[in-house]
Image (cartoon, rainbow, N blue to C red):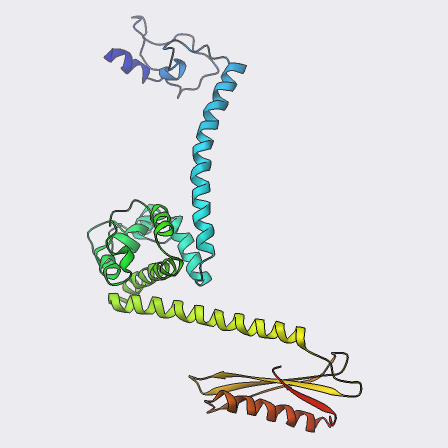
Length: 322
């Protein structure tokens, strides 16, 4: 039996026969190449020689095998596709989504990936110097990374460190975390990668508190800005629907102000239209050292009146919000 197993693993052109003359096949089949092994010509189930003829039966058998393979691949792809769809819907910056997609597809410039391209001489993690630097090591498994997660989100503090790959980890995150916690987790993951790059290129290792705070602050700033933009867009759309034209031989001036409380600066805008909705004039300006919304609106009204005076528009209706 040992000899039989040995013979099956031999190539067709090697000495595997028991015939003492040459121990090789004297008249090899021209349709077979030199890499064909003996076991390739034996029917696995019936344990007899394969005839080597591509028949309808052979095609059907291969088709069924391929169907089984595709079924497994399809199920796995469908599961990953659902996870990615949920991730794309998260309220996180596009750059963070792109980072996560690269990480999930092992496209980040980790030491292990760089070693495979012969760019670096070793794959050791530059921070811990104990294990190979992979995507999972940087974002989940490194001792320095564990320090960040231990102070970050309670829902993931007690998770297993040895999760297999990032796609599997993301699948678990999608199942167990709320949308808000999922957004925070992904933001921190990108923060961990940025910390790694800071250490590699600037030789500075940010503390776990700095990583968490920077990630959360950036996420909150993005989400707050998005909410404000949505509200402003809704207001503008509502205004367009409610805007009523003035009477004939009369104009309407709409004005608005946008206040930046932190910078104490306000932007002013004015638009003047006739009874057909045609734009007759527009104006904009800015003022510094403004802190109150009411004062900002007052400056916008003043700008509208000034523009009407400069253009000698006498019959004008003044209406807030441009």
